[in-house]
Length: 471
Image 1 (cartoon, one colour):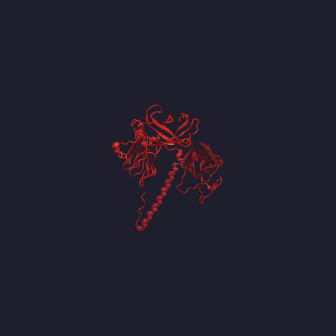
Image 2 (spheres, rainbow, N blue to C red; image 1 turned 120 degrees about the horizontal axis):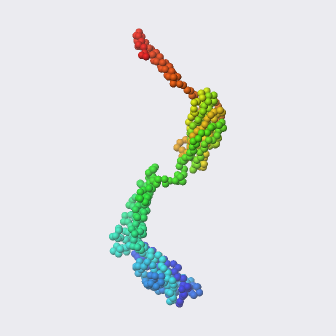
Image 3 (tube, rainbow, N blue to C red; image 1 turned 120 degrees about the vertical axis):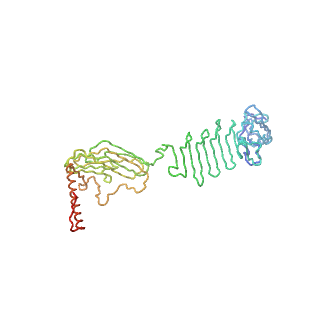
């Protein structure tokens, strides 16, 4: 019975019946094959037995016939299954002698083309070319040894003859992987070690150490070490480490994204002078973005500059607030120059310093340096610095606003009563006046000392003369 090439569906599946298994007595030389026989109309042939010849060649066309067998196959709806090698066993070295084999089928005297290449499944019985020197082969256990390396090892080799893969160990297991370079460098090593936990080495392309991971033990924790192209350790992690010793990273390798909620700072500086008015006004501002909940510490410093005239009371105030123009009397400073003081020969400078602490949520926060003066005063605000710092964590109690203490007047409005202000009493004297004051004080001290000496003499020598005090 003849069948055209289009009337036969060739290989549907090729699979190894039994994969390689260490410890078995032998590996079956059988390869499963399934096909379907169709007639010239494309319909399945009648159920029954049909003679089929199977052939293996070393090339897709022509080439050398390396194996063949003819068998009767039983069909069901045209489908049949056959184990290649059942009627004519494969030679022991067939799949080792040829990198590729192509299956040709003959039905009813007609050859089905094209040939079908066997997939890698039949070749798994070779385990990719396990190195098994004949003088060390033990068919009972398939324990493999070699005098070229070490007992109990398995190696695979590439088409270039270089080692690719090695599993070995007579005490603990290790796996080596090699690259395809001329020097055949070992780039991956996985070791179970004797009793110190698993280890993985990922080496550079020349086989030198690149990354080393140690799983650790119940006594010593895991570690990870990474080296740069010069072999210098630039990254390391130690699970048992404390503080800076726990992690090593390259300089400037951590960005703001990784830090996220680390402390941060914002700062503004105004180097000019502004004249204050009686209206509380914002003269400087600073904004900071908090990545999460935490605290903002705001500080302000600069100085008041006053040109005093006798008869005028000069008073300046500065405040820190999150509202522009707000006279926040919980976070402020004040300086006054008394009206009775003489007109100054020049400017009077008074440093200012204010601190404000507040809890915040994530987002942008703006703070203002507000200031004002009393009517008729000549006060300027100069060279102000405004700094905001974010802290994610507190290590103690944080009071956002300190309440006024008992015995002090709580200031809750923009006006400050005159009686509540202690003014600066400043005077000027000449050198001569200063010398006269010193001589006066010295004379008083001498008189007091002489009186004390006379009193002591009367106590110890009531009748003796006084010797006086050496002037």
